[in-house]
Amino acid sequence: MKLRSVFITLGTLLLLLGIAALIVTGMNYGWWSRRTHVAAPANYDLVVPLTRGSFTLKVYSPGEDFVPKALIIFGSGDGGWKPIWEDRVASYLSSKGYAVAGIDFKTYSQTDFSEEILGKDTLTIAAAMRKRLDASEVPLVIGGFSMGAVEAIPQAVYILARDHEESEKLTGLVVCAPGKRGRYGLRMEDTMDEEPTGPDTFAIADFSKKLGALRVAQFHGGGDILSSRLWLNRLEAPHRLWELPNGFHSFSGASDAFLAQLSEGLNWVLDGTPK
Image 1 (tube, one colour):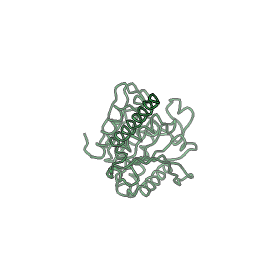
Image 2: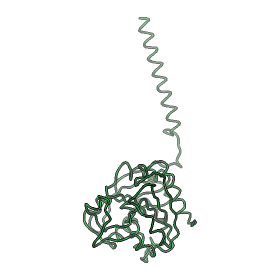
Image 3: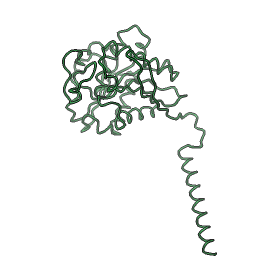
Image 4: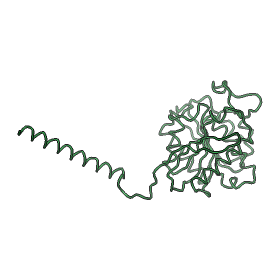
């Protein structure tokens, strides 16, 4: 009986210690605190009616009742919206107070499109996000990775060329590892690291004179032979280049060092101080 009582007492003690540890952990992470100034991230799919039919956006928001610093429309690489890169980057940006509308360009490009279709769809996405987040006046930033970075450039040019309210709110471009050329669509050879050629393709340098005073932040991984920085030499818009040593095309899998650079680039874009 005494041995049994010892085990019961020891079990009770361990249980109490466990509860105490849980309470301390909860206090540290704010599980029970009323930190109303910190909004819980809200990530979800949002279906929007685009030119060619309904399309599902990947939305990353700082919180339903949180006005974001800016709205970022961000396009994926040609492999689609992946957890290891696009999801990681968008989650990071939402944790920093930005709202992200993610475009899976592998899905979007199942049928060919045009600059006009892409531009109109971008305006529709911006309007849908502003309504969903009740964020009508925050700045707009267009960006993307690889294929998404290439497509971001004509997206921005289309908006700037229109007498549209988003033209005034469009603040900058954030392009991560863009190639020299893009296509209004996707072919198998494009996914095999070949430069798109032929009808409905374009060189990003063709848009270098059409960005006006839009701020352009570009990110390049050291050792990346797929992306291009040459178009920056022809760019009249204020621009900066961030390079991650030995980052290669994926920036070492969207490493912490790259995310820090991305945050710095966005701050520069929104500050509007060319360097």
